[in-house]
Length: 157
Image 1: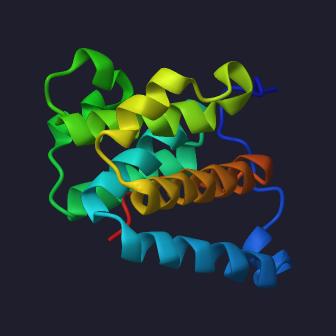
Image 2 (image 1 turned 60 degrees about the vertical axis):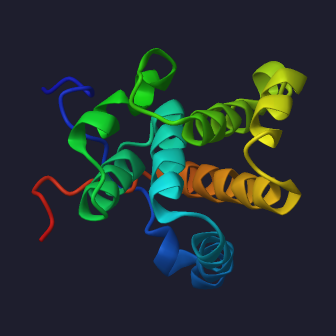
């Protein structure tokens, strides 16, 4: 008998097949966000939120997408510890702080100091769009985790 932690959990439901209209609606939000924010910054935010939420499927996808877009492996390795890393500029650091605060809203209610910091680097619309990006990836994370979306065992081509 194998231990339950020896293998990745099996897919529960293919949520895209089960509720295609819901996935399409969430995809609409994602398309909006993709058109509003810098792609590199967006991938860093998606990766950090996915790390916090423990979504293996999304961590794998967004790390791959960021590498394809030219992001360095060194910076991707440092996303989880961005506070201690000199590899991120001020705007990226503010965006990552905002992504963490909004993802962990139940912990600290998005503190005023984080809002003041991110507001120095993003105007009102940009900040709302960044928040939509965090909302979108957190939604995708919750779908993937709840229904155990499968991370490809082999590197997709």
